[in-house]
Structure formats: structure tokens, C-alpha cells
Amino acid sequence: MGALLKVELTRLRWRRAVVLLLAAAVLVPAVVVGATAWGTRPLSEADLASAESDFGGRFLRQEVRSCGRTPEFYGLEDVAAAALPEACRLAVVSSYVGRSPLSLSDSLESGAMLVVAAVLVLLLVLLGTTFVGHDWNTGSMSNQLLFEARRGRVWAAKALAVGAVGLVVALLVSLACWLALLAIASSRDLSAADGVLRDGLEQCLRTGLVAGGAAFGGYALTMLLRSTVATLGVVFALTVLGGTLIGVLGGQETQRWQPQLNVMAAVTNEVTYYDDSGLEPACLTGMARPRLDCDATQRIGAVQGGSYVGVVLLALGAASVVSFRRRDVP
Image (cartoon, rainbow, N blue to C red; front, top):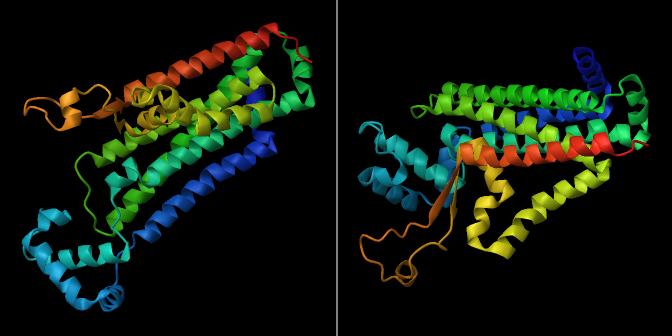
């Protein structure tokens, strides 16, 4: 098995399309981090003066004074009184010019790190598909089985190779992006909330696992369908139409089973969505009693999302290996 795994890793390394996808998996996240750093760069004194002249100094000064009276409305309740005037000026002008300071927490929940995870998952699905799709398109799969007739070992070696490469690449790239954001925040003297460093490292690990699973899923689906084009069509349908179809057929209560929400939950640790289907009628009519729970916010945790993804991958892998062992190989 070890020798067979080395062969598959070598074949993976020499496939040009795979090399291009791996290069994209490094370059695109780097661009995302670079764009985030540029879009959140601090405002210089010239930027502040220009913004104040463009948007009207009198109105800005009024809002700065309002910020000084109620800093909690601007997220500045922890700023010392001596530094509050300048902090209010920066916050108000930044809101006018649309340039907010870098927030590590926001980067994890809805910013750069979430974009990086989405890019890695997409590219690694393509990697898994391209890796084995070439064997079916060229007819080389039958030649490979001449050297190793036990199909289960061949299937497992390919799956382990593509899954391991996907896991390692996604883990290293996401970790590098997170460390880069930490370095940028440190260079700008931006404080981070307690636990953000650990949360980021945990999200990098979850990103690696989900992206590695995506590479395995692309491989398993292509082994089942024996066509790169068919696999890409199925992935497109599930990504674009699957969630919409589930929502149309089942309504709000089916959101728990939306693929995108579960994948996002597995990466970010928790996702919230709105579902009022289980609320009492009084909540919907505005006649609810004070003690009646009318919160329609529902949550999907990392364990729930990861279990959803794991079950789908397990079922797909089982169908793929059974098909490969039983069907004729042209």
C-alpha cells in the first residue's frame, strides 16, 4: 500500500492541471489577504483632511461630538477619555470614506479568512476531480489495474493521496493567511479580543479538514461518474441550485439542511439563520406574552455542520468504491 501511495503522489505531482490548481490555492488567498490589508489601511492625516473637506467639516464635527458623548454607539466604550476625541474622529471619518480598521474577529466570521476557506474548498474540489478525471478520459485506468488488480487498494491509494494533499495545502495556506493578518494587526497596534488567536488557529484546522474533505469528495464523485464534466455539473447544481431547491420544497424549516450553511458552520464554528416556523402564533401577531420565547434565531454548530459534511462524504465514498469494484473498466 505504501508503494502504491507513493506512485499516486508522484502522479499527482506531475499532473499539470493539479500544479496550476495548487499554485492558485496559494496565490489567490495571498491576493485576498493583500486586498484586505490595503482596504483596511489606516487613514493618514491627509486622508482625514481630504475627507473632512469632501463631506463637510461642520457635519463631521457634530458627529464627532456626538461620539464623544455616547462612545458605546461607535464601539469605543473601552477607549480612555484622553484618547477618545481622536478615536471618535477616526471612527467617524472612516465610516464616511468606507474604510474600517482591520478586525481579526470579523475576518474570521465574514471577512478574509472565510473567503480564503471558500477559495480553498472550490479549488480542491477541482483538484480531486481533475486528478482522476484524466485517468478516465484517457483510458489509463485500465492500464493501472494491470499492475495492481485489487481495485479497493487502487481506490484507497488515490483517495488517500488526494485527501492528504488537500488537507496539508489548505491547512498551511490558511495558517499562513491568519499569521499574516496577525502581523498586519500587530504592526498597526490593533488590539485583539481575548481568544481570537486560538479561534483563528482552530478555524485554520477546520478549514484544512473541510478542504481536504472537498478534495476527497471531488475525487469520489468523479470515480463514481467517470467524467470530469459530469462531476463539475453535479457540483454546480448542488452549489447553485441545491440550496434553492431545498428551500422552495421545504420552507424555512429545511434551512438546517442547506449544504452551504453546514459547510460554513463546519469552517467558522457557528452559523445563525432565521426560522420562525416553530414559534407560537402569538409571536407572529405581536400579541406575545412577556415570558414567551419568540426568538426565531437558529444555530448550526461546528459539530453539526461537520457531521453533515462527514455523512455526505461517507455516503459518496461508499457509493464510489462499490461502483469502482463492480463496474467494468473500459
